[in-house]
Image (cartoon, rainbow over all chains, first blue to last red; front, side):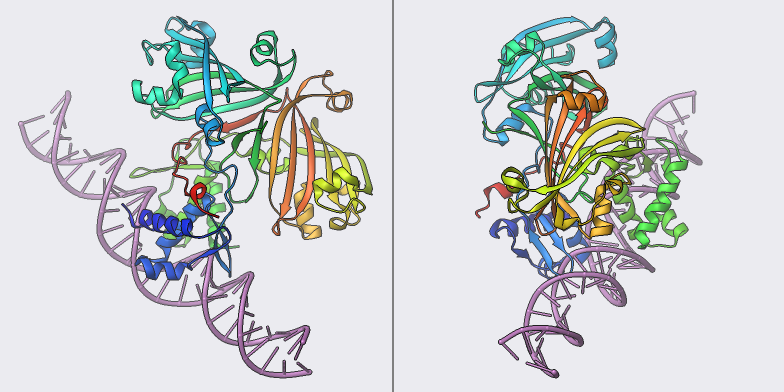
Length: 246
Length: 246
DNA sequence: CGCCACAAATGGTATTGACCACCTTGGGCG
DNA sequence: CGCCCAAGGTGGTCAATACCATTTGTGGCG
């Protein structure tokens, strides 16, 4: 455990005992109290400021900040995303098949066109209501024996990690507006040609290899993206997805 | 100009002359070459790493990273957003009027219904092509004498800061999918009922007062949101703020 | 020829000391 | 009583130095 990490934890303890808007001890005081140099304190505070726990005010002090809606949220998992806002996530597998990748999928997943690929179509539910319809593409060799039932149990990423030892380390996601087609309208329970988000995500493991390609259509009447613009200059970090309350 | 900012600019120059994947000089070399301490170099590099220009490899060096197209695209102004995408931003004011806020606008802007409000409708251009149509609402007392021409010159936020001394410090933005109506289709040059993004943004100054309310409709065929999910694992921290008593 | 250990170089962490720019506050003056 | 300004405290920046952990290339040994 580095001193910086220890300092971070100590300050986090302090933060928990304080209310929003109260000030933490000055950097010099923390330095003396914790027996570390001021620069180490600053490095730890830098981290906490980046994460949104604290705000600095030059000449004044460092204060506990209001919890930000957008902080701590990751875009990676629908399951986590829903849980964080108190909704119960669910999943219903509509179809699961193993097929040769073919030209298009092979190119997208960076595998040979003859390689076996699992293609699964499923509904994503929040509080038993359909929030999105999703098509998942993943190399069959990564998830041998994957069943439709397993896909409904919990987070796919947790499954990947715990059962198959595949850790999702990063990815790229694009979002565009679209309108629902017949299949999507029926699945989501919305009128034909309703506005919707189309999410396309490529996930990579630590080695940079593509793990999955996912296309999701989110109903536009119940799902919206909320971004917190606080600290627009310095904070080049999180964007978060937030489901609109019903 | 602080030494750190100078160092940052120098390194940025170096980056432009190098290709992706090439290494910049070591921190110690930069320190010697630029005549600043290694700490200052590190602070500057920290910033560039945060912004995605560089990646560090312990024991190996610091390298130019692949350009991340738009990972914080919605966090800044349209002007900055387009520049980051390598396009030339522009603006054309369609209409600008000063009207009483009324009930709805007064509530949104947190002002009296009788207060004068500037309502401006303008096209946002990228490389001379229409990218979005936007309606801006701002208290008239904040921007006395604002003209249509000024709105076309550059970033509205730069104008607010430089001419009116109003610094936008934060805000909340929501994004939802929609389809274009007649006016939007005509303005954007797309068919009626084309998919589009509807952005709604509330900006606040440092005091937390609402500065502006903006509604923007972005054409969905040319504008996509791209998010980089790398690092989402690291950001997955225990959240003490939720449990904290208020 | 191939493997391995070691040395050099790199970024990561940490200390001490100093000065600056800014904000807050309290005391003094009108 | 109220205003103003100076002093002290705060975060922001910078220097010089030291040691650690990791990576990598190279030279020597088998």
